[in-house]
Length: 500
Image 1 (spheres, one colour):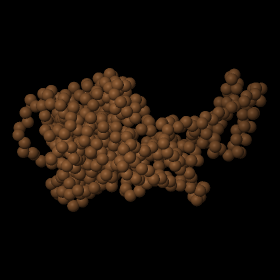
Image 2 (cartoon, one colour):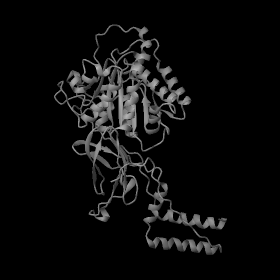
Image 3 (cartoon, rainbow, N blue to C red):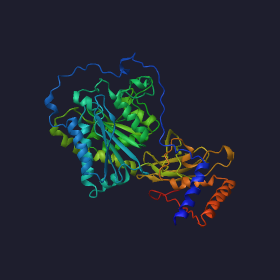
Image 4 (cartoon, rainbow, N blue to C red):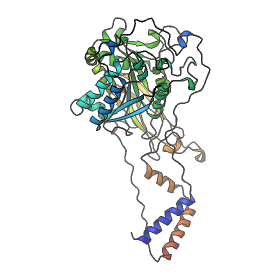
């Protein structure tokens, strides 16, 4: 196209843009809301600050062989360089004393959005339980060393986005104590469903705030935190309304028992426990805690989290770390891979526009909702195997759809295509796709956004714009023909086994 033709096209585009304001694309809003309330410290077990424990004096020699915070930071950064093809290193915030909370993401497309489940491991929640941080670095290095060599490593790297936070409490580790630099137990610092102990946002610790913000930004499917002092896989609920030690089941009790059992049975000897049948326990039945990270993840983060006690001794000698790694290695890997191998997975689309929908997905009889992602419309629902489930997808402005599935020992892939609800008045009908949700991130659909824009222009405005273009082209005594091409949208992700 020559200069005059280009001028005609530019003027035409500018004329249209000046006539119609373009709405800003809403990107990444909050998925969680919190309400401030009064802090309650009237009961001793509710306090977030620690009482002085009657323990023998700490011997510094037991820390020999463990990585310091600076050595851990160096190891993480070196890993990021050595395994740059499958990793991305980032920080989610800082501790009280300003130490970065480093995370390693491992995937075949690190740092990118994909319609795949995400899993996170968190270590060193308590400063005096350092085994987790050591084992998580071994896990990252094992995946790097065995990718393209081991089928399990390939599955995790290619089908899951794994995020590893080796140390949530670097200050506590440096101080050789359970709490952080403010002597707050970080596993009692989250908002609680039973008591308003942590409802005052300004009282929360920076490490807690970092975790909560992290879950707002990431769409985690499942998670596990690593602790020490026992050998058991612990699952929700962690507390109860009456504060008693009793089994207090959450809506997804069967799914959580499945997750805990996956870890326990893959472990060297956890499932052989005489104290905990099968090596698993309900948290409230073991001993109730309040303000824990595990329950908050499930309630507010849409993330199925379990708590793993991986060493009877909180701070074993460093020479025992290799043995502990071998005892836990297969459990750590199998728990991640269970996201792909179990439950129901799929995507939700609009039958009218073909756009992904951030729909709600529920299972009949289980009072819990999983929300599909706003970018790809993908959902990942953990369910116990060998069961029959009725899965329901719904979205305001669309007809609800449901289907019955049978889950055996493998997961089920199930897509939903939701059609507009014609019973809703057309003028009051919500917009489709990304425009229906202010929390939506519409990256990757720029072409379809442009088509929507032109679709909303009235015929009169088309005529007006055409006259402007014709006048300018006649003025320069040239003719130009504008061609607009429309490309069919291509679905991203694997082909699903069922569509309803």
